[in-house]
Length: 265
Image: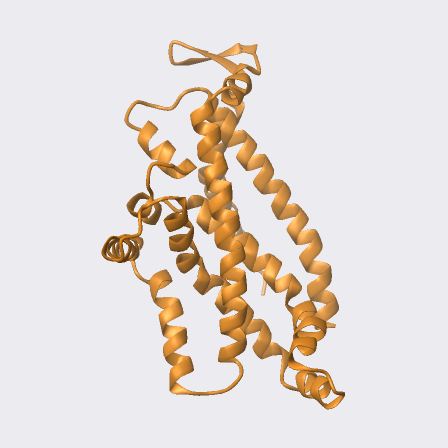
């Protein structure tokens, strides 16, 4: 059904407004990173890469970025491994215990982050575990586990038991079936879930704020800088993160789409 011209024009207007609201705030710091900032004003007639040079010498920001990458990578790997094992267990049969396990996996993700963070903080305090990057990694793993788990469960349920039964009938062990049958099918799913989990971990602030120690991640570092205002090198950091994020998304799509089309076909 063809939309009336007025309705079509309204949809275009809403689309343009949404894109402007999403991308103009990103464009401003990116453009500002290539110009000199003097007395709080951008000197548009003086292009410079000085912000990037200052960023390269900012040890505090670089340490926070490194900590964020360590936490995100570790949490993603742990969540992928645990999520795969839990998903295989859940799809292996039907029982009340499996449903209870699934509820426990979803609960930290569904609760408000401040409740999840407080619960983890109390747990670490009562068990005598000192807050550090390890506690942040554990907290992020608990938080992103539900996303990885659910993605893998959906993929496993779409496979059906026929392939696994055929592999068993041909004499393959459980480990051989997992390595040669299940894992290749889950490869694209694990990559997609890993990208989403890393993005959630990279951006997580509230939970991190409650369980972190003396080592700050990037969101916590930026949170602290908000009181005094951001320095010009933060604009350069925003530009670099956005460029790397876009590149990773493009590579992930190029890798995942052919794999998904091949498996679905």
